[in-house]
Image (cartoon, rainbow, N blue to C red; front, top):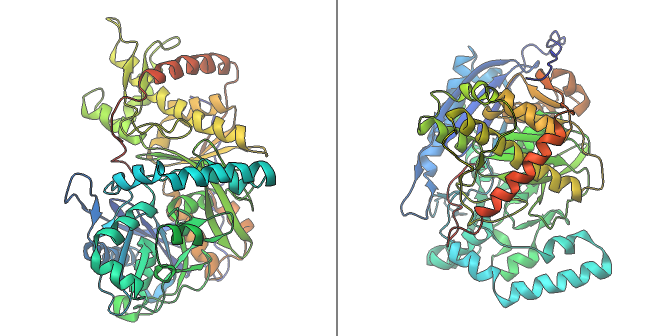
Length: 538
């Protein structure tokens, strides 16, 4: 499917760089991974561990901090050993983490008050609904819309349609402060620290010397204002959250202290902290305004480099940060779809195919335009429709429908969701969207990649390695350690596996087919009485 181009080979090692190694951590919802890269970003060793998600009640999804810490230290040691190195060979360490999972702990003792509350947790759902419909928020939206009409400041446009969501930290943290009396009391006495995963791990690695987060992780909490590039004091006061509990904001690249020698035997410098999606855009070398990165894992994330300006949206596209280095702070516009890899896994579970790798060939065996449609909404539909009560399913089945028709409909639905988000961003952007870069396990599907390229009319690049977040984190950590001096030095190190070019002669047919799919989608909206947004991956 589509034409391909081979990337250039990795350049020969630069003089004096061969012995410099980077430990890059990629910490997801259920998997912790450590990669050891050399100065030419070859993977010399790696290790991973699974983290158990805890479900103390149907609405709660937690992680045990002690288990996380033990496995975090273990994968670093294992990866170093697997590379045939010792900790003294490691020049620097970088952390790339999932966002919006948080914990609180005692400033005096380091004791945690509860487990990590993950971004999948919906214990605060009643608070979310209560606050979204309260007079305070209605008034805030109305005033913001008036201010936008007068001042034309996009910050007020974003505020005019703002709604709280379970995936955000704000209401889950408020739930903790309302329901954990000890935390509330100590917070107002100045004895509580709050942190996302990166913050807590840095605190542990430095033995309590540093309580900080970077701009990209802070921007994912919804307690931070990307338009003023600081914690949102207005909302902290509105939600009665003491400013003292929040960490210091730091550049993604720089001095993050050193790992205590007691963990690895030597003091390893920490030189980068970044969110997983920011790291992924950086690893894709998406350095120009308008560069588009699509991460296709359990969920799908579409991120666009918006340069030095935050993106204001009325379609549920969120302004976040990618990273901040010596060359400046990069803003991103982000849209997500919770169901992507989950659809592929479900098809395998019900017996439509034995392996996910078979789906591209099965879908390609169908001739002519599809008349069967699938809606990938096991967890609602996100931007630009933003209907958490939508459901998933097939439409248009007949006695002639085959397994291949169903598999093709499933893959097509994933491409249509990407194009929905892409179109929404295209309509709101005041700059050109450039070529697409993809990463993630689902990006190995050639049928899907070709369809996305044709729908968008853009060249689509797939890298040789799907571990782009880890690569981006390694790039940033290496810059912090002086291995590379600028973003420009990194571009030759990026390796492309294949380039898909749009088949423009097929584009009109696909766009017509998408219109039919969107009609089908309307049949599946407003189905559930409560939010179905309770599982997924960030």
